Length: 429
Image (cartoon, rainbow, N blue to C red; front, side, top):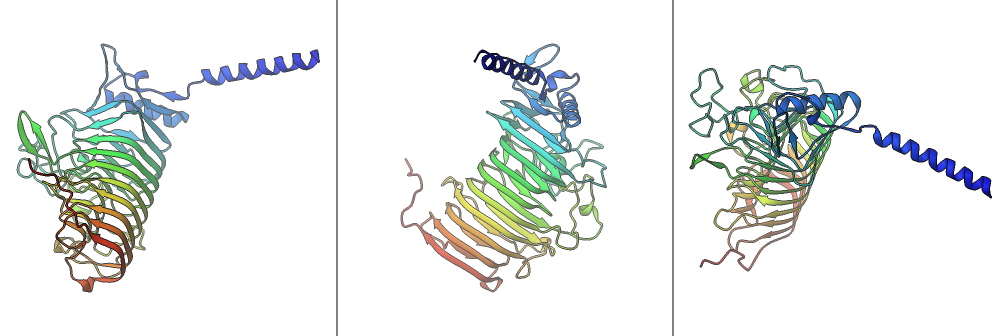
């Protein structure tokens, strides 16, 4: 009996000793361990984490040589590499007024990078309360079709040597050619363009993201327009992605699946240039690899500043198919309803006009509560799809709007689609 007891004690001692050694081994790396600007320290930590297989943790407290603050002020993008696990722990990251760059970008792409190598295993997640916030005075806002100082705000307006339109550098979180990724539990406020944009990414998950943008900012007491503040955008070639619990308000579409090809080798197709809002190029690869497909969207609640809560748009021979949307609550305020809760397609000739029947197909849209001018706005084509359990909260107007004509809708089944008999608008005092 004594031998068993002694053996048990020795075994326990060895286990505790081994646990102590494991616990003492660092499993994370922090930018507080490095020197330089905030962006430099974060990127050094990411490099060390990728090299050693460690999780990179940006903590709440930014411990500099001269002071400790609760703000990480960056003047260039945080670059996530292959095999990066980036934890944002109750921290506040803000773009400086000098910054004309993303919050976070996959390190395989950027200015002048014309050959983007695919990477994998990139995971970005927040713990607790995490805020990514735009600059107080952005150098540039809007997409590549917007001129600074004329249509959208930017302190670079009129500055010699600086691009006078927006571009992909205005995007908050930008990833291109990334497989096996996740972005979770973040709040993004006053993004300079689209808050999150994914280009040719697959096998991913985006969840628990809250947006807070209005389409304008108050700068030195004056209201300034900041255009193209979409929430989450999926662009060319995105596939096998799960999207869950997206909420808040945006200055443009809250959630958009946008697949447009211009064709040719013009400036719009340039990879890594300054003339486009897509860092990987606005063109079409053959074989269907640039189609948006196999997307699941669940639990969306928000509104989009007079635009669309969810938008599906494809043109130029690119397709959108196999999309499940389950659970969409349109929270448009009565005095500023969105244009549509869901918009499908567009007749704009600049984007190729109404797509041929079959290019947008197998959309399964269900459990939708609408407070917008239009509920389901079909402005392009739609085939082989199902729309069910839809309630329009306005007492006038139809739940389904055939803007492009019923001839562009084929084999689409609508069920339990209704208009409310009671107005839920706020009563005037």
